[in-house]
Amino acid sequence: MKIRINDIEYQIKEMSQKEYKDFRKQEDENTGCEITDTTQEVWYGASHHYQNTIVIDKDLKKDRKRRVLIHELTHCYISEYITHQEQQYTEEDVADISTNSHDLVHKIVEDYFNEN
Image 1 (cartoon, rainbow, N blue to C red):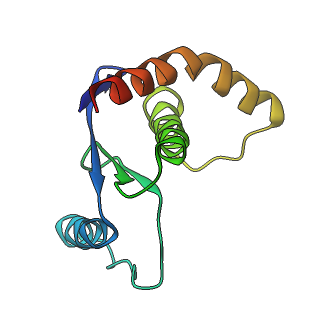
Image 2: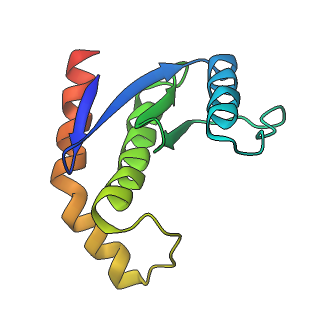
Image 3: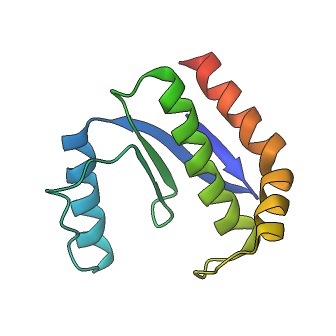
């Protein structure tokens, strides 16, 4: 599913653990980053801002998948509306981010699960 966050198009994809690890390795190679060691990791989801892609483990149960999608969309919201830099946020900042992103994030999640 394709979505827009602050007029940036993202694709939401579901992948197996193996598919994700291959995707991650390919992204690292394409961007010139050090290859991430994914052999010991189990992941639920990830946001890839270079490729404007949100990836979710396709084998998760629906309730966990919803929570993971909300989590990843929040990363995208922060990246596209607030900053691309690593930051530490106060409790007040977190409350503002949650409040300001709630409607946008939850609308995307509802649309996603209505389509799938």
